[in-house]
Image 1 (tube, rainbow, N blue to C red):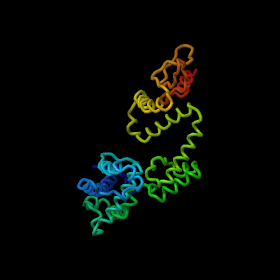
Image 2: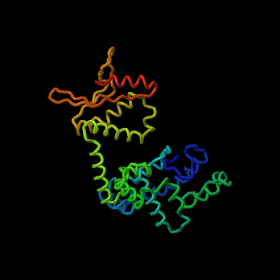
Image 3: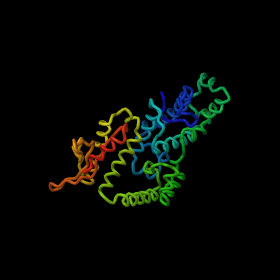
Image 4: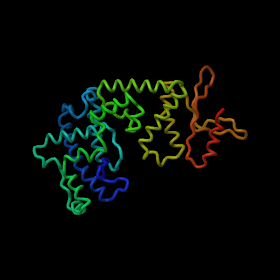
Amino acid sequence: MSSLIQIDIVDYENLSDLGLRITKYVNSNLRDIVRSLLDILELDQEFDLDGFFPRDYLMRKPQECRNSVYELYEIICSTNIRDFIKPKYEYLLYSILDWWEKCADNEDDLIINPVDDSLIKDLDNDDGQENLKWIQDFQKYYNICFQNHDFLPEQLNDMVLLYLNNPKLLEMAFQINLDDYLDLMECDLRDRYLEKRYEKNSDFCSSLSEKIVMELISVIKRFQKRIVHFEKRDEVEITADIQDAVTGPLNSKYNVLIAREFTIGRANKKLGETDLYIYAEKDGYVTDYAVLENKYIENFTKQYEQLMGYLN
């Protein structure tokens, strides 16, 4: 078992075998703690998850909250190590640790699994002894299992209020997408945040062309969070993924159409085929809105001239 939950005391850019073993050990404890909660959920379908999620989130989406416990368990039991899990899972994990601490009759019972002798031996040096203490101290898990605590109410409220007063400053200071925290926000702040975001987007999207660009940017941002899924795909496959993702929203919201490998342009010798051609058609009249060309950058000047050739 190799866990997805990164441990703050391990260098994952230069992951060693020892670092991997530390990660596995801490996550074996997390796994068994979450499993204990799942056992209760499966035995008692009426078990109240109050305290594990914000009140409003639990009331609006009770089944999603219940499913999240299973999803968190699957994350911890995964065969890959990710550098990011969604804030809702961080909040849930933090809440489960707090619940586990309150349930324990004895402080010695908080850490479920003992450290094996080989790991103790390898950490028995000046650099490793501190880490050995930390991974056996349950109180340290509130820190080493999280890169930050932005998901907790006080910190999140501060970030939302900063956004409401100065969105650009929030982007500079935290470089996060507050949309990921929507379900964790307090009700009034979430309403104000959504109003502010709508106003900001409305100001920017003053024309249909800009709205189309915003839809494309939104899709690409989502793809960036799943970079491991795309790194081995070629241009054609990625273009198809983009088309699949934006066709529905563009057509339903703006009555805009998308064509693949569309012949277009003003080249003297031979017209090219753009990857995606975005247009509208009404009463036989066609309006051009955008072309999308997906490229591995090899010869920028030549590829730039090719793109310019598509314009009419």
